[in-house]
Amino acid sequence: MTFIDLFAGVGGFRKGMELAGHECKGFCEWDKYATASYTSMHLITEDQRQYLSTLDKKKRQKEILREEYRNGEWYSNDIRNVDAGSVPKVDCWCFGAPCQDFSVAGKRAGLEGDRSSLIREVFRIIREEREEDRPEWLIYENVKGMLSSNGGVDYLAILMEMDELGYDTEWQIFNSKNWGVPQNRERVYTVGHFRAKGSRKIFPLGTTDRKDSIQVRQIGQIEANRENPNQYRVYDGGGVSPTLNCMGGGGREPHIPVTISRNGVRGGWK
Image 1 (tube, rainbow, N blue to C red):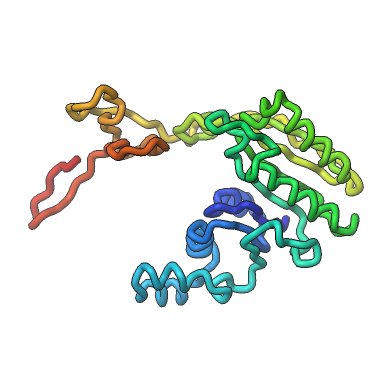
Image 2 (cartoon, rainbow, N blue to C red):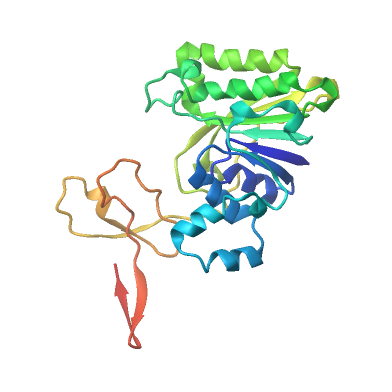
């Protein structure tokens, strides 16, 4: 299946789709630093990577934003400027529109917020498409808080919009901890299937058997001078550390023991 990656960030959605065997035809991302990272991780050739490595950091960050480093993939830096005629014809559109206005950690502006309202731009472009050119699938990801935004009316409006565009929709909440990831992260996935091209049920999906899960194990504690001792836990270097806390202030990163060789002498360093 072919797809495009909207509100792409650094390409997490793309990576998952490619691991499942699908082919990306282009992406849209506003932030230039995310675009630079996306290009570096997913698009450039090895020769281009070697050349970029010869440049200093500032020149490299600017250079990689040039069109040639996208190697023919479609790209837009602002979904508000995208029209149906410029979008590649693909089977699926993936989008994780900005979540800040839906998140319980934000001001809960919902669909009236400047960022989460950008999902309407996706619907505008689909509306501009001829019916035979509309993608068969839509996959929309966002925070769990979307379900309760404006008393549930905002999500209902999204589902109604998809229905008006000709899509039968399903949704399910997934928690990353149930899929082999050592993190409690709940997200809502909404799948739309263009009813003119048939019907196929996707959800509900079960969880993994966790046989391949990586366990995170605390193995020590650094003496802390702060009230919160969680910041000084030490984790097993053989697993995956917890994610970084989003609060500022420094000193919040997980601690993992490593072994460093100095002058042929190996020792443990925190």
